[in-house]
Every structure is written in structure tokens, then in C-alpha cells.
Length: 297
Image (tube, rainbow, N blue to C red):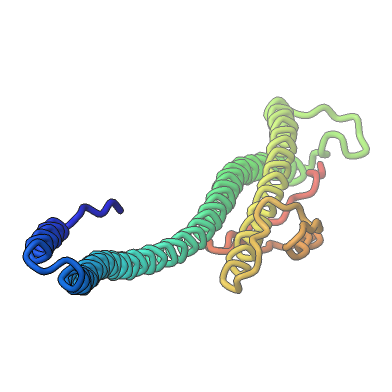
């Protein structure tokens, strides 16, 4: 820092000049030997005193300048401390906000995984429902085919009954029944009934075959629907227990962080008696027993 001379320095120099002038005047009035010595001593003492005052004043001035600089530096230091405390508070507040934001992001990530698993579960439910719907439609078609087969069987039975009545009439009249260990030719009405019966037998056999195949296909579709519903239940239970979701895995396979998937159970071989086709989440459906091939009498 540059220090400018104080006004007191100039005053001190003027005072020194006056003192020297008075000393010269006194020297000119006193006798040469004694007066000169006295004047020199007096002038020297005054000069030393004045010089000492000048030095003391200069020292005090410099001390005051240094003290002023120290006070200013202390003020700057105090201001810097206040700024540091304010910045530290802002930093702490920002750190708290970052911590809160991280916690929120973690919660959102967990919620996202839950929603993704829920979406996967919903897709599985949709697939299971679609399979069940397709199986029910196939079952409805099979039941319609079965009704056609029953109608054909009823028509065949009616014609067969007419044939038997005609044969009874012939026997009652004392005539042999054509084709029973004889060469008798059938009457026109009986021949017509036999042809109709043969046609109805073929129709019954065909419709019953179609009904059996339709029922077989419907049963297979409903079994697939049952497997899909079981898978939905398994995934739902896994989500409830907090286990990794097995969505997208094949039966019996494992992936890191998951558990083995249960393989579908063995197929149920249905007996000839009527059984219940049960799909989880739907009402039981009666499946009539398949018919055997028609026997001609």
C-alpha cells in the first residue's frame, strides 16, 4: 500500500527552519566564544527534541495506517465468514433436496417395476381370458355338433322303428321278413324305409364323428386356458410375496434371480361318462360322453 506524507511532516520542517533562524540570530548577538557554544548546545537540543517529535509523529501515523488496514482486513474476514456460513447453509439445503430427490427416484423406480409387473400380469390375464373364450366358443360349436348328432340319431331311430313296425306287420300277416334266411323281396314301402334308414345311419355316423372331434378340440383349448389361468395365479402369488416375476419364462426353466416354473400337470383322460369341463374363474360345463360308431341291425 502506498503511503502519502502527512501534513504534519511539512509543519515539522517549518518549525525546524524557524528554530535554526532564531539560533543564528542569538549567535550574532552573543560574544564569539561563549555565545557560540551556548547557541550550538541550545540549537542542538531543540533540534533533537523536534526531530524526536517528528519521528514519533511519523511512527504514530504509520501505526494508525496499519491499524486501519488491520480493521479493514478484519471486516473483510468477518464478511467472508458470514458468506461462508450462508453458502454452507445453502449447500446443506441443496444436499437435503438431492437426498429427497434420490429417495423419490427410488420410490418411482419401485413403482415403475410394480406397474410393469402389473402390466405383464394383465397381459397374462388377457391371454388366459382369450384362450378361455376361444375354448368356450369351440365348446359351443361342439355342443351344436352334438345336437346335430342327437337329431340325426333320433331321426335314425324313428326310421328304424318304422322298419321294425313294417316287419311286425309282415310277420302278423304270416309273411316272412325279407332278408332273414330267405330270398323274399322287400315290399316297396319296406325297401324305401330301409334305404332311408341306411342314409340316416351314415348321417348319424358322420355327425357323431364331427361332434367327437369338435369336443376333443374344445377340451384341448380349455386345458390350454386352464394352464394360462394357473400361470396367472402363480405370477400373482409371486408378486404378492415379493418374489421375482416369472413372466416370460418357460415351464421348468430358471433365470438368475427367479425360481423354477411349475410344469403343467398330466393330461386328464376322460371316461365315457359325462364329465365337467372346469375353467378357473368360470362356471362348470357339462361335456356329454362320446358316442361309439353306430351298429346296424
